[in-house]
Length: 209
Ligand code: GAR
Image 1 (tube, rainbow, N blue to C red):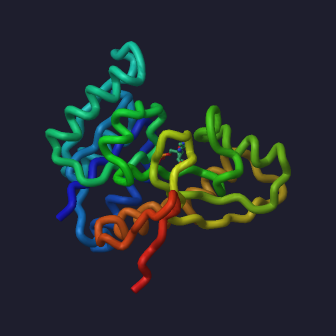
Image 2: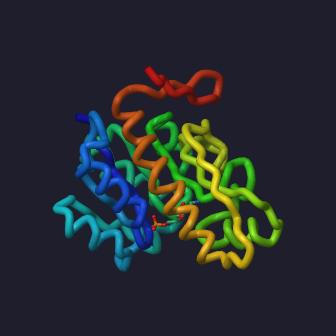
Image 3: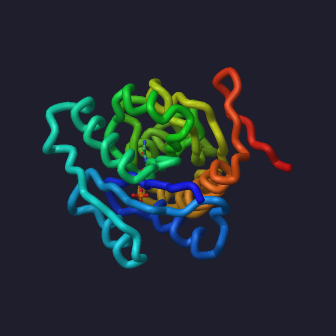
């Protein structure tokens, strides 16, 4: 069984989707062994506790920069013998040293169809504000491996979601979560744990056998 460590900062609905998928037996070959939060107030911590999953808080504000924070994170990840790191609403940029230590073993969920509405400053509700400001008719979510480029790593899965008249950022965010994020994140995690993902020349391929 691969050890899945989930990194969170907030509400943790994507963590919940992973927990629910695990309970249904849909995460094949892996198990969520630990949840790490950058924020002691994150509701995601309650979700972990309620489901008997070990959790710890590593507050970002207690570290001077991303490098110091990532070094501390690396220690915990090694103690946990992490095989896969899932960024599920994790709002801290990881240092390149950590990304290299876990090359093609860190997965992020992003609430848009990358390469639209991604990169520096595009996170959480802001992504949906930008999508509505542009007037796009389709948006969605992307699950990708994390590399040194913010939201620029190999794309694993994407799912499109319609924008509807009268959408607010909050309404659109909820639809993108329900119709896309909560489905493709557990799928991608299971594919990884089943060894059905490969990366060649910077592109991820899914083995659909
Ligand atoms: C999700 O929409 C996730 O895609 C987004 O933050 C939200 C977290 O919600 N992540 C990013 O924007 C990362 N760039 P959650 O805590 O309920 O899972």
